[in-house]
Length: 254
Length: 254
Ligand SMILES: NC(=O)c1ccc[n+]([C@@H]2O[C@H](COP(=O)([O-])OP(=O)(O)OC[C@H]3O[C@@H](n4cnc5c(N)ncnc54)[C@H](OP(=O)(O)O)[C@@H]3O)[C@@H](O)[C@H]2O)c1
Ligand SMILES: NC(=O)c1ccc[n+]([C@@H]2O[C@H](COP(=O)([O-])OP(=O)(O)OC[C@H]3O[C@@H](n4cnc5c(N)ncnc54)[C@H](OP(=O)(O)O)[C@@H]3O)[C@@H](O)[C@H]2O)c1
Image 1 (cartoon, rainbow over the protein chains, first blue to last red):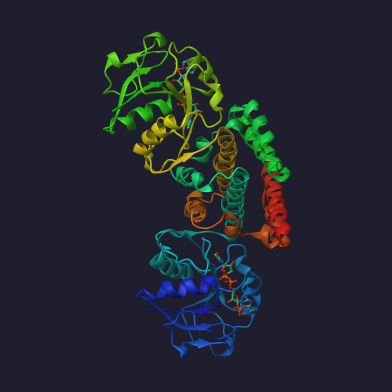
Image 2: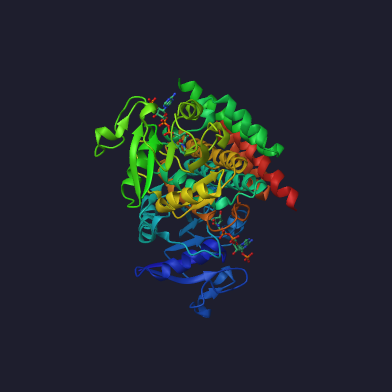
């Protein structure tokens, strides 16, 4: 039985708690958060504390608090030489106090309160200072998901930047597409199938091979017509910047 | 029985031919293309022509040729007052010669030779000069797909621009994310689940509500660290342009 203590009561803490409930080999023996709130209605009140001083002995402490609070919380732990991990994509391993054995247990997905999470396909990016700790993290992550990776702090930082492009910036383009549709009262849902197809395709072929459109073809007539269609200056700027980027990338290849 | 003639032998022509084969109420009675090639191995040789002068009488002529060739091909038709449509997202209805009754039959999806198409969820954007013709197009599109829309030429142009953001530009961001992963030998597949989730989410909630990330939070420390991580100047430029765009959009709302 692997004994786990979860620190924090946000999105990640709650989703992890719920997921671990279904894993026989794992027992979340205690939870800490500032307000002493339950992570799940079925949790027993006695398993919750708002006092770092009364934390039990466990095999793994998961610090799932805001990035800014990881240091404070890990500095406040009253024990040594136990395995303490954070769940952040953007904080290095050494954010954690080195009085304990450190690690990272980062689920690469966006969690929100409302939405249920199916952990099975969520990639876990793991890091640990010691082989034995890494093995334990692999066991815990592997009980939730089939996608488990060993990733260094440097790689994780790179991955986090890549995720900004793949998620935040992509979502901004979707919102822009919706705004453009709105100008002519075109239902945005017409684009849903194309958007799903665009995302699915890059799981099958290299995105460079999937590139199409007027920028790639250097179809200046269409590009000009599109720019004339756009009334919002911000949309024009982004259209021009991305068209130039696609041309510079694929032009270089010719 | 609706009698259809397909003109062209490219991606769209072939996929439409194949899809119509399964529709009882539709009969593709003839096909035209310059080289006189079959659109499908099961097609009979006698149903193919490379001569516009011998086209039979049909209820609907679908001109699925390159955008630049729509005018030439429709000018070459030897009959009047029949229903002739093109399949282009970016060409106005009046590209077609007005000797015939004109329309547009635009399937909004990217077709490629290799990949089978499931038409059922592909949105069809229809336009026609006459109500009766529109009704016929709705019947034909409705036999293939459950997503059928009446869209004016102006709306279609807007939709085409929006599709560039939602597909071409998005794909470029995916390819950039992959390049960034490659610099640190991080497997790009780690991002697949996030990318699929990002796309699925906007079919459920407004993309503006789905926006997250350092740009939205105005997390200047993280933004600076990301810019330092990026070694490629083009990637830095895009990062800055999209960060500014997200801030300008969401800042204005506050
Ligand atoms: N959300 C995601 O999509 C996601 C995905 C992967 C990884 N992560 C990472 O997971 C970690 C937690 O993220 P989250 O989304 O769960 O955050 P969240 O929902 O915003 O919750 C943050 C938690 O941190 C606690 N906290 C903040 N300051 C604290 C302090 N000084 N002392 C003790 N507790 C403090 C908060 O407690 P109060 O309720 O008392 O304020 C709250 O329980 C972060 O490192 C984040 O980068 C998040
Ligand atoms: N591909 C897509 O994803 C997609 C999606 C929606 C709509 N569309 C639209 O559908 C139409 C066809 O696109 P596509 O992708 O099927 O194109 P494609 O695969 O490139 O095929 C173009 C076809 O046009 C023919 N053609 C070109 N010039 C011609 C001329 N002067 N006279 C006669 N035939 C000529 C070609 O004949 P040859 O083989 O003899 O050269 C070929 O059969 C376009 O309007 C396009 O905008 C395409």
